[in-house]
Each structure stands twice: as structure tokens, then as C-alpha cells.
Image (cartoon, rainbow, N blue to C red; front, side):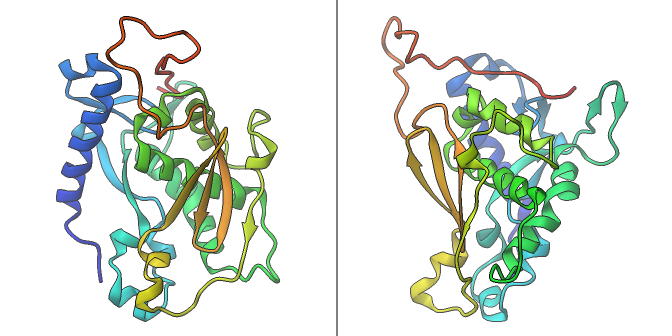
Length: 250
């Protein structure tokens, strides 16, 4: 099954993410912009594109029965990333914004991971950072801008632009990958293995994320399942949510 109606998916994602952002940062209601979850620039609708968290080039390696039974969109997990060119230190970066950055620096490594035989294959730091980045986008996909606008979210956004090495602030337990034997056949009882790319479990200050046969962690500032207090006249400072709107690059 091929990807299904990406233009409609873009509009659906746009309105859902706009509603989520406005609920956290109300002044965005007066604009027609959305924050990119990677660079955090406020950008209009036309400068976003649908992003497959698990790249299409990796999905093309799935067994034929899987490709026939589960759509590409389901197997990849969709979100939005900007396609507005990045400018770093006054110089324009070739490509289409964070979408191209992810494609250039991470997508081929994610494909390697999904097709690797870990009994004979060792992982490079680039593989691990690629997996970490996919995990961050998976958290954003499920929990929205509360992930992006937290201190841990800022750390993950910074890590997105350092593909070759982990930043020293990234916890050591988020720099490890546990692997098992990959499944190679499709059956209806185990369809979720293919149709929902990420399993997420909140474990204290980290999220334990499972991508098929790989497990790893991404840092969190708070439990994203817990609601924010919205009706109190004030919130104790240690519990308040202060959105971090730091833009990584112009």
C-alpha cells in the first residue's frame, strides 16, 4: 500500500499542531504560523512539508506482505518539518530546511538500522544520534509542543543539528541502544509491530522508546501525560510550564 493523500495529511497535521501550540502559547492565535519542532522558527503553512519519521527509503526494504498490508504512512509515522532554508552564521544551508537536514544526515542511517543484523553489525555514533532524533520526533508526534518547548526539548533540538556526536548534556543512558532480533514475516496478530512504528513508555526523566527491534531513551523535563494546571490564579514555580521558544538557527 502506498502513502495516502499527503496534501490532506498536511492540512490535518497543521490544524492539530496549531491547536496544540495555541493551547500552550496563546498569542499564536493571532498569527498564521507554526513552530518547526526542530529549529523552532515560526513559519507559515506553505513552508512546511509532511515528514516521514521513518524514511521511505527504509520502508522500501520491508517484506512484500508488509508493504501490501500496511500503508507507508502507518509504518513511517507522519509529522511536519519546515522546508524553509536554514541560515547558519549568516550562510544559507543548501536544501529545504529541517526536512532536508534530516534527510541528508539521518535517513540513510535509519535505513541501515532497520535492515541491520545486529549479531554482526556494530553501530556508529551517527546511527545512535539518528535513532535519538527519530525518538524525539516520535515524542513530538504523540505529545505535541510540550515536548519541543521544554528544557529537554531544547536539548533534543540542539542535538538535531549535531549529527556526528552526542552533546555532553545528553544523559549517558540516552546514548545507548538495546537491540533484538528483527521480525521478517507478517501476520495479523503482530500487525502493530509494523503499523505503529514507535512504542513509548514514560520512565521518570526519560522516555523509553521502542522502534521495532530497538530500544533507547530520550530525555524528558516532565511527564507529558500529566495535564497542566490551567485554571489556578498562579502555579508554584517548580510546577509551572515556561515554554522555551529558543530558535536554534535563523
